[in-house]
Image (cartoon, rainbow, N blue to C red; front, side, top):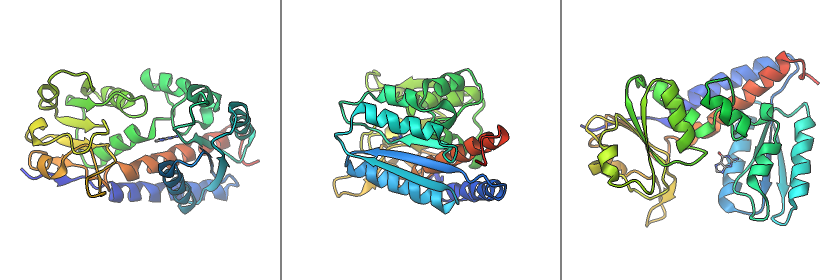
Length: 289
Ligand code: GUN
């Protein structure tokens, strides 16, 4: 079998058009959604991610604010920026780009973001609500993967989903979102013994381990759906995932490429969360200002 391509660029574009329409309608009522990004230091990857987030938010008609701080910024000063944004009624989404320098406590900064503006879905209040199935902001990458599956016509209910990777940002919330949609979920990680025993049982295989082309056809069941969250460079400097695409696609019934799979969906869901936050602010009378 040669797997069908799950096209994150096309699906992302479709959703961004819907978001753009939502932003237009809300802006007409005097409430333009606003996203603020705090970027600390000069990590080149973080700069690229932030530039893309800003560009995409402007493209859908949002207000975009960037606060750039030096690596030497104190925790106190960073927290005071977060607090100012919490109070700013023109800002509906606050994102602090990670990682932060070692002298800053990431958890403290995440907890300082007002939960109703935490469009990354990293605040413990949002994580807790997500786990018990209450309305909250969902972590953008797993949320984007759910949308990819849904819009590709993949049935989740009753399927065995195997997740390789247990990060707080991707693996853990991914499992919860699939569980809520009635999948049977298995988590695997770096200490799992005989990984392929598990991955070969997956109807839906989600890989987020940060190891270049690690998952080959030997790890994949015939007909499985394969979702690759990896973002690595191969020996020639070319972007590639955690899945060996050429090999795995021979077994998969559908598979995401890298680039052009999960990546475009992450920013799309950030925009969706920001719109949702602005709509809530409008309903609560906190917008327009
Ligand atoms: N660094 C890498 N991915 C992310 C993300 O999704 N959000 C934030 N804030 N930082 C990141």
